[in-house]
Amino acid sequence: MLIFITFIFDTILAYEITEKIYNIQKGNSFEKMPDYTLNMAFHSINFWLIIFAGFIVYLIWGFVFSFVMEALGKMDKVKIAIEEKNKEIKDAELELKDFEVQIDKMTHTKAEFTKEMNKLKRIIENAIIPDEFEHDIFAFSTGWISFMKQGGKSKEEIEDANIVTHEFVKITLHSWEPINAN
Image (tube, rainbow, N blue to C red):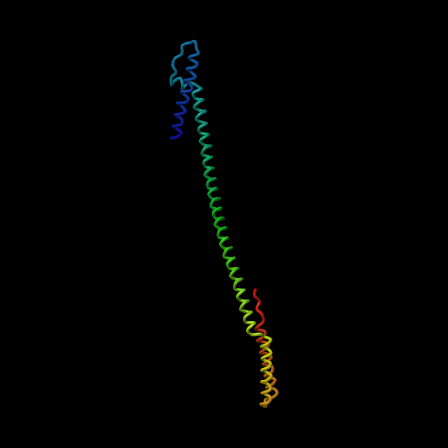
């Protein structure tokens, strides 16, 4: 329908142009020339050249316009995809910032727990001093072994008590070694 309307419009334009040319020639001529008619227009080569040139140009520009619009449509799709990816990147950057804040909070919390743990460890170390504990255990053990000797216990029983005391001190002191705070 659009092509037909364009053809009609181009025909009217061609008629007007060829009529103006004819009227200029008629005005400059010394002979008597008839008025311009539609039949004369159909037999004029200029009429058909104008229709052909206008209509072909219209078709060419129509195809060019169509290709341009199609390319723009594709570019819009690419632009939309790029905008979508940029939005995803911004969202990921915001999420990364949130994670960094959480990591900072956790690092701070870990530092506070480590500080508290070291504080508690110092309290424990100050409450039970291993060197004093060892001295007290061996002092008690010496008294106990003296009691065992006076009570008539055998050398084996006395030696077993001495071994148990030394193993107990060794195990107990080993369990009190400072814990690595890392």
